[in-house]
Image (cartoon, rainbow, N blue to C red; front, side):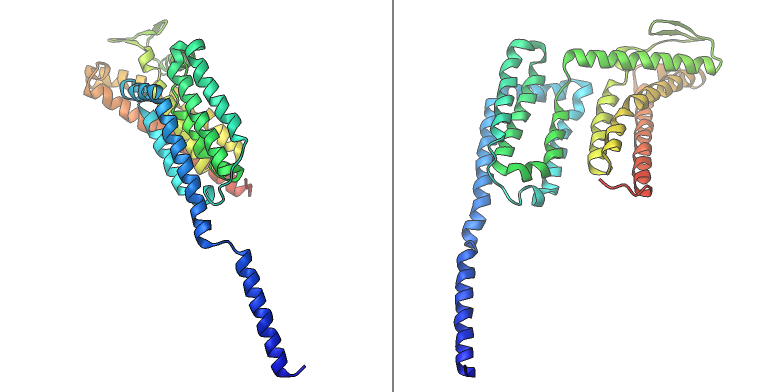
Length: 315
């Protein structure tokens, strides 16, 4: 075969390869249009779901606005949305229909429907659990296992915006109140302060104090729980450390309460009695105590992170 024939054969094979490649590759318009249809479908599903759950959603907004220890809940969906945006490239890379999402949708609808009958006092709680479960099922159905896996932390983080059941909240308040009373009483004894304890009341020189339910630290505990889960999911690398950090919330809050009670008493004795009365000085002591507890939460976070790095562990 001479050189002219060889060049002709090469050109013909090149044309055939380019034609086969063009046939194998999808059209750019169809490829770009397909994700848009997934996003549009899920957007319509989300709007319809919000309309169906409009009453419990409005009640949820009222709770976050009117209940002091739930004022932080409004931030949780905003943080979750930011995490979605931050991971959007991975989450929405390859949307595909997954029929397993239908089971989650049905479970969420069932939870919301049964909340009226079996938990009237916790109607908002179980309705919002049903809402997020249904929305999560729709997400799995539209974006598939790969998108769901990439978005699992922002999705499950949303459940931290759900108010606790009344019975669970009451038990948690009692736990924090009881631990704060015991630890504070212990430190008063260690410091040599004459004290007589009667239930939640402390009889002390010059002043009497009550560790009421409002002083249990429930607001700090719920806020730090959200923050510890967020730090664990975004900063820490190991599953055991992510599990351990939220467990430190209760000891940290109890220590915060103890230091605040001791500080208010001694400031009232040696500086001004207004530290024990509702007002600016009383609130200021709470602000400093909250800041100290926040610092105590970051200390184990840094320690867990550095320990994991030094030990060479990876997720």
